[in-house]
Amino acid sequence: MAKKFACGDIMSGCGWSATAKDEGELFQKIGEHAKNAHNIISIPDEIIKKVRSKIQDV
Ligand SMILES: [Zn+2]
Image (cartoon, rainbow, N blue to C red; front, side, top):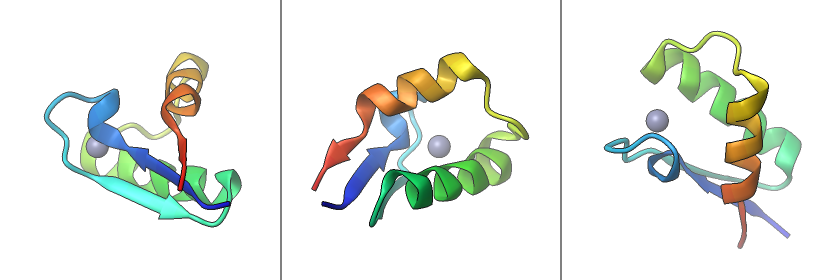
């Protein structure tokens, strides 16, 4: 099952979203986006937990 994440769920105002074939690939995309769009070089554990709770099966 593919996974989907919408950044706006945790970063209000951000319209970015991504889908990937599994959670590992999705987190790779999220990592790149966090760096490019939000200047977050390494994602803190609490954010990862939040992201995880918002990931949807698609
Ligand atoms: Zn974002």
